[in-house]
Image 1 (cartoon, rainbow, N blue to C red):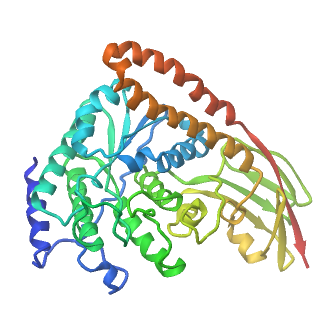
Image 2: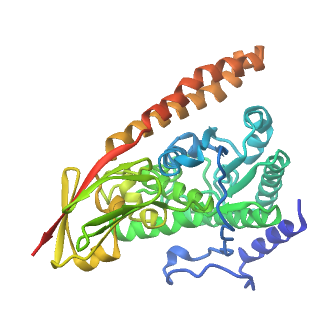
Image 3: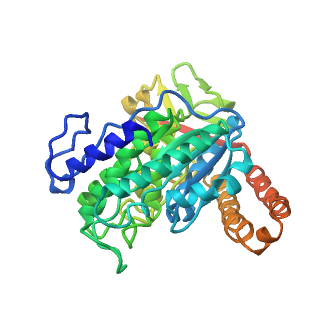
Length: 437
């Protein structure tokens, strides 16, 4: 284990005993007791886009990954928002797994497919659902470091994901120890260890814990104590929590977030569109575009934890990652009505000149149907990947003949991969701009 990581474990252990630390930490939003006891190292920022054309992305983790929600959001997003990169994705979630378990199986299950990028998300089971102890940190640091080194050895770029947070209620299991705050402090400690590992091994870092813990705070303030961002069992998030997780990983990958920009000059009767979109026609406020990039389309109630749209209220997903902008210049009226698909909304001339984010403003839009088809195809493929690894590779077929099992299951997976690309195609749509005098 690197000396720096050993030192962090010792330092954090002192912090939990009340010693004041002189290291750079994240400032808390306020003095709310919700944040008491958390020692948060400053997270490193991405040094530039991680993804390259043709990358093979491995999404690795425990039962939270095996839920196939944040991994599905990520794969669908990369498919529709960055199609030019042609990223291929596999998820490797395994219920109940600790970092040591993944380390044991990663050569057989993951490295055989030659990943070029990998994300990890361990720590929930590693912290043993109890208050932090140095032995927990030592085991986690050792195993996580070895995982990163194993990926590095085959040339894969790694994003070390911190564990998520737990909810504010006790899970319904008899082996749980301590209070909800005790367990979140323990998870936060593993998060800080992840930061040190990422820095020591020149890996990226996804701040899943802090993004979720902060989002949970605001959700409880805005939507009430029945809002379970971390799931009804305080461990397995629903869609809103998984949107926050996906946000953390996509930010760590430093994706650009620019889906496209449509610029209309009403005074000059002209329009332009950005890369990934083709201008079909523009005349008298009617703009028709053929788009080869989609925004991430999400519906659902803003105050419900089972809604991706709700997760978008807790982190700046649309602002940072999902910008499909309409800019309207030369409006002589005070406002304009924008019609896109079956929905019409009115904006002031000032708002339109600054630009509105269509992805945020129009919950249902002309991309929704095509987006749903891609997302459902991604879900079917990821479902098979759980079967492939857990039931085939680690079942009787794999024990009898692993290489044949791999070849046979890859033939079964191939049409599921092809179905995603078949579902993804250009969308032609029309925006109508009607001045309101």
